[in-house]
Image 1 (cartoon, one colour):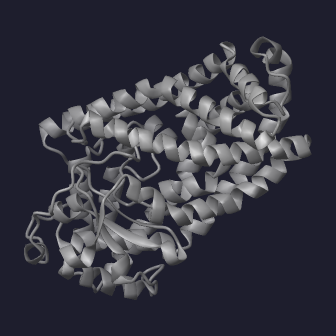
Image 2 (cartoon, helix red, strand yellow):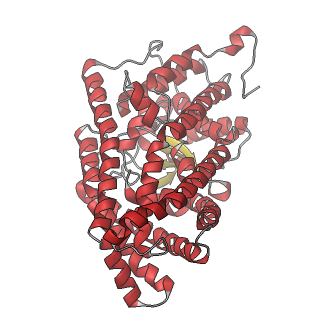
Image 3 (cartoon, one colour):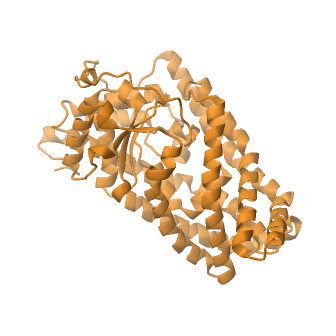
Length: 453
């Protein structure tokens, strides 16, 4: 796990759960992709009128890939599986080196010599330690982008990639500096209960960042355009679907993200910041009914209350992680603190040690959090089928077509490793989703849907 993401996840875990678990189109291999991945913007070449026509493709009952794409999908998913494990181990090594080489201690001394004021010390220490960790942690990210380019998932040039990385660092440093200052202020104020008070403080911070994500952070990395200007027919279809869900996303908040090779659509934010986004590639490669199903899956997360449930789950997990960290950090520093020149938990230089403990906790918790997510993703699939029933002709087959297209474009593994699924899949495997979609039909038995009556 990327150490920078660990630090931010520690502080805003609930935010990360909400962001990571609400995309129908994001396949498990999307873990290869950086949030900052982007490509040159270009107008959609799709024809809205053509996309509005029902698909004449043969009936789909099973997820399959042609031989060449099958082999590529198998290869890229093996790389992704071992890449996640390798990145986790590499991240631990980076944190250990920052401690072993006493870099954190040197930055602490530099900050304390700069000013006796704690906030000014945070302004010196935090950027130095975060940038050091991230620069040392660049190789896995570079390799990940190389793989994405090799398999055609990303067409982003290296210059653009590094510019996005730089922007990401600026955002991370600003947020992390404030949070690190708060963390160590709480530790100094209450050495025995800091874990509880900081957990409590992290929740509103997470919600605030989640609110700002679509308004400020996402536009730094992607170009968004009003969907109604580019695809008026699609916008009208999405409006009808949204009205049927009982939710409210005005047309002006429906946007198209700049073109990538992967497919995606998602709903993000809440309240005044809630947005529906459909990537240009999705518009190009899917017809209107298929896009409406993908978007209805996303709406299912809101209607079924998945976001607050995931926030609650994340908050509970964060509570446990902070407590375990509190119980562990003293033992860790008593054994290795002198070697690292770390004087105690209230020492700025203890931050990489805290991050190391939390890295392990997050990794170990992967099966639990991902099982939780897969359950909700399956519910959202079911909701999408129910809300499009009667709205889209042959909705189950349309859903199956959408899953097939997503798998083909994004190299969904047709034979996923059960260990990989257990550890790292936050969505059901493509074959499982494909098997469910065309067979879900309670209406033929005189019943109604579970979620949409």
